[in-house]
Image 1 (cartoon, helix red, strand yellow):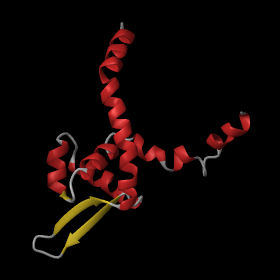
Image 2 (tube, one colour):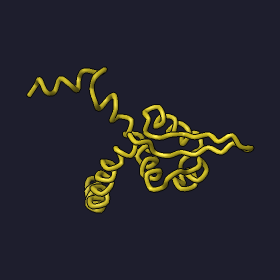
Image 3 (tube, rainbow, N blue to C red):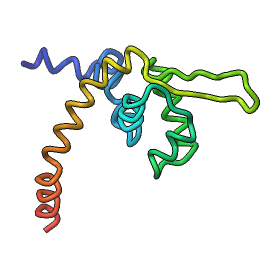
Length: 121
């Protein structure tokens, strides 16, 4: 058992620290879910759809997802320039897992909120 737990203390090779921690932020999963429902989306459309995210935070989130090859950014040479975002094949392969998590969240939302309220006392 202890040998299996060593993988979590190996900072450089821990899958949670190197890959999954990316989805612990407030916005990445939501961006992927939204982009997964459309073929392509422009920055301002995504910003409006999300509602309560700042332009700066959306930019940071998109760049982070792009760095992991989960989102693709395409710039069209127009005036003004048109920029569109879409999920990559890697992003699409992740979406089935995110949909499972989102389904679980929907099924358990009320019970979790009730538990939180009881916990607060």
